[in-house]
Image (tube, rainbow, N blue to C red; front, side, top):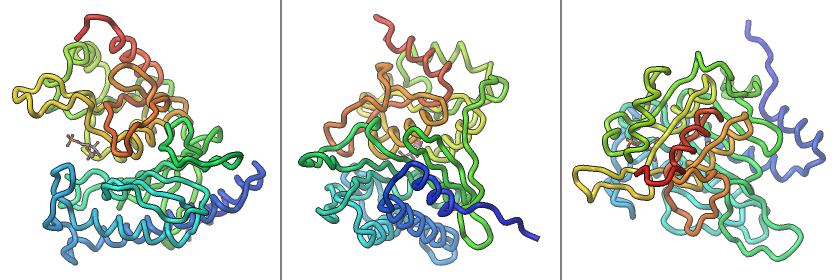
Length: 330
Ligand code: F6P
């Protein structure tokens, strides 16, 4: 006999009522949940239907586009458009900003299927998004927003069936998909204080390419914590949010082939780093870039901007931030 858990829709209705908010955000979230469920369906059946391979094209970054990337992008844009609430959207899968409804109320920055190396295996990927609201008091210039201006940010882990949502000043909440494909059972996420459960997460194959100060920090700390790496931000951050610790994707500064260095980092600021940083802040943690600057304070100058990211338990992130800020430590 199944239990009757509170649904996400019910949770959000109460949240909006309690905080005296409008129904617009509900309509937008309904669109995102509908998109996520449809993507989930395509992903689960992807191996059987031949949707887990490459699309046969290359994107502006020179990366091979996966068929599922395209499907997930089209599904998401369809639902966002029909919600009527989005002024413009920034998608990982589109080079340009996508105008949707000039009379809308929100901006959205999203990656509909993040963690491409997992796609051919049907292993966990993420649908990550950050939402900012238009300036209701004055003229809206449509500028790209820093993470601290987001009103919400979240991630669906597909096909695992979890949905985690950070709401500004109202915590980070996790839901699970049930047998009727409904997200249910809100649980408030708070990063655990006890270092006994903490984990470190980074691509260990890259460690000798990091700056010397980061390599030193890893050498000093790696024995204290478990190490886990899935290679999809949503999955790796999901673990860190539950168990505590830190996920990092540092600058690649010392690659043996200098053309493979990534002086700006790899992850995207607006729809990867700022999204996890926002959820992390609402759960009591923090996130910084390679200079030790809080990720949420970075004002984007372009919509596909990259950044290094260190995100997780406050104590660990503050510790590495101090190291990153040291002079002459390169
Ligand atoms: O930016 C895409 C992404 O797949 C993230 O989801 C993930 O954290 C990272 O790249 C993995 O990169 P790598 O394969 O270099 O470890």
